[in-house]
Length: 553
Image 1 (tube, rainbow, N blue to C red):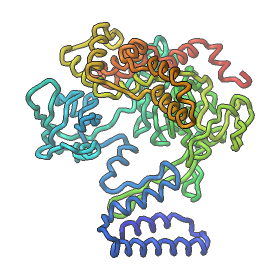
Image 2: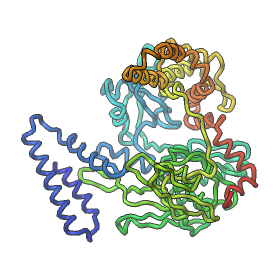
Image 3: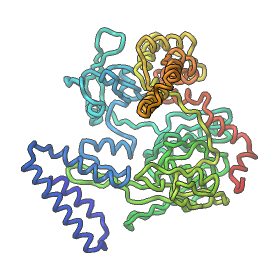
Image 4: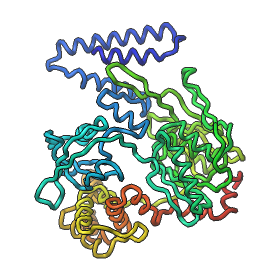
């Protein structure tokens, strides 16, 4: 009880000294009530209460009433907060996941990290850490056991598929830094950089990679921020600075406290003011990634290509709490060069879509929010309140259900493991293809293994049938329902043929990452990537590139 009381008092301490006396009284009164309430529960409730669990529910419920990004981190979760802000943690360097049979497996070891160096492979089932049996443990529990102080050593016992004996690996934990730039290379005469998170030093890495790409002949640059959830604000400013002059205001943060108000200005001489630049974004591009893409858009320094970004314009700051815990709380909003805030207008509800307003200048009938107009340095119109709208909006085909479910199913992992055990090496990524024989084998494994997935057509038909029965129409329409049920009958063989091209892509990804790790997976994903192709086409057309950056286009 003392812990929760101290935590709440620490939060109250953040209120300005000028807070009204009545407000202070209400805070004190309600904390007193809460304290007394829990003591009564602890004394008289029929069952014994587990204080840390019960009070944690109270903390989470309180924070849930605020914004989605204010979070409490108890001592045991502080490693997650550290990794989020630095990209570093002490461990073995591998993604793990749970199979349907509740065993935890190695999903993807990182190149050059302890897991890969000792020989752990995708698909290995984790059995023991030293003498600790991992059976029945959740992924988070296993992850906590794998992490630890750098330099400490343990023995990991695994069961490799298709082998009768278990294997023991002696592993020494290291400081693991997740690579912010898993891949960069040339696509024709365009330099391509896959950029996944804003961690310490990533601006220097971007600079180094751009110099390298230019030395190799790059005449333009694509920075891929799709799926980049953000990170350190200062790194975003330094990356913008690579392409714009020194002394420009890139971001302003404004909060309730004076200490939360800051202005971030470019401090260095730029790397290149002229090279044509495109930035790729999507619905998972957020926070610092939106600062980078939005600032370059506001300054007319890059063409933004893709789909509307997430819309996270809130600044979080970690604050220490008692007992080695911490809170990451929202302290301000940030504003980019045009003056707009990219935060989705109502973050407590489903984010509202501004596309209709952006295209028509009018509010949709059901839209009660007024989106405010702002202008880039060259006078192009941009709006506030719904993330970053790309200059070139791309449309993508919806991923088929079967492909979605196959991509995360054990059958894909099992097939990949079998493939890699019979292929010591594969060609370079640019030359690698899944053969017809490979596809036929995977298809057979899936069908023979009883692979199933949720089919929306089947669900919708069942719902319609129930409604028709309830309203008394079913008997009259029974022949039609039966005929439709036959046409919609589950036919896995047919579905594999219909969605072959997309299934081939996830198969190739599964294989390539086993040999060439994250870099190879990114390179493989570039094959047929329409966003990248559009950006490269645009950068290769100086007239069109210039037109995109002018007003009234």
